[in-house]
Length: 143
Image (cartoon, rainbow, N blue to C red):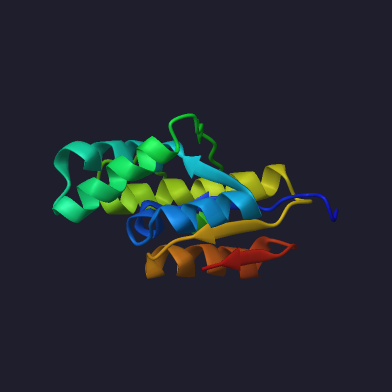
């Protein structure tokens, strides 16, 4: 297992709070996974960001990861709550839900690999941490 690189699941909140140097460090440490919804959110921010800084960071990130692939994997679990596509949720809640489902699905599919969730969304981190402490029988690192 020494040669297995960790999976790093990245949330848009973590991307918007960082710059090129951090993205390069993440990529050198593990396999960065960008859930499809995060990719779509970053693309959306290149056109309709609230602040010019968000737009600039989103554009820089998409340029940096032009060849990056986004993943559409999910696994529902009762502890995660409503499904990601539930229209009664806010956009941010749907995004958080899909990231949690992606992290859970990847951890389930590859139990031999450490999954790391990078997020600045405290509620998302707490939800996934709660899920990890309740049902996962392996390490889950959170930032």
